[in-house]
Image (cartoon, rainbow, N blue to C red; front, side, top):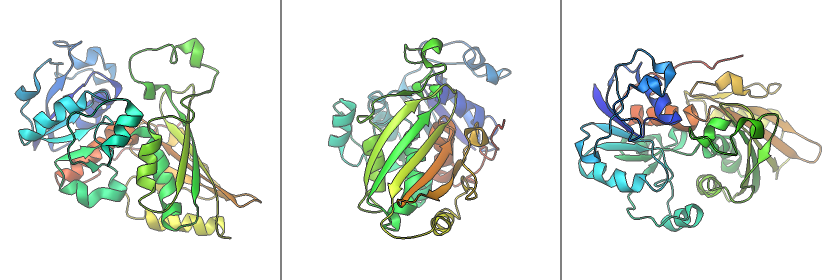
Length: 336
């Protein structure tokens, strides 16, 4: 049994961490922090957690006594918190972007923030870095768009079948966070599809960093906001350098992910659905269709709050402490 804290527990990712950890046989949640909601029961913010005795606390970082802390904090805030936890021997899974980049200069360019506390961290994509995660004290949980985009791209890059991948991602509104904004106001998003940061989204260099490790591949990425609550559907377009069949490519993906508990390769005649992964830690990958011009289309679907955030964070925690990787996460999606 380990003691776990959550810093920034009042957001959507904090709520999802609490939801899954409630059923974890080896975890005791000892702290859920929130300055704004200190002293009130977590269910007042997360109504799906009714019946929980846990209350939000506003406590200093140096007063948190835990084996592991999830930092569900904004970009720029984690770098003020994480080093203090690491110094005290507490393992950390950071859900911000502060520790995802191999080159701090890339982070500073795309996030427009000076990094004040660089640390060695393992990029928390279990399908690639499981062995490193096992030994790590600090895991940088991937972004939501990068999770779906990278998993959809890696086998193509590894097999040197392409030199360019264009990722078109559609995200649910929960990806914008719990605080309402003009962009997420119901009349502005309902019955609408809104592309944004079309060439400048900060998740693009994160995707490029990881895909490039598997092959000399350029990545372009454009996100869209769609009027659903949860989920990211990513369509990867690319032109094949070799004359291969869709069945051949599907087999590459099946082999690449055959031992992965949370990646499911769907049949060639199926397109991954958001509803099939909603509320779950699964990533479904499919389509594998090739047109007359040699363009292949790969589609991935994840829940942005689970495999794209909190579920993957718990998956990383399980690996770090030698638990069953699927502990508390072995749930199916919510279809319809």
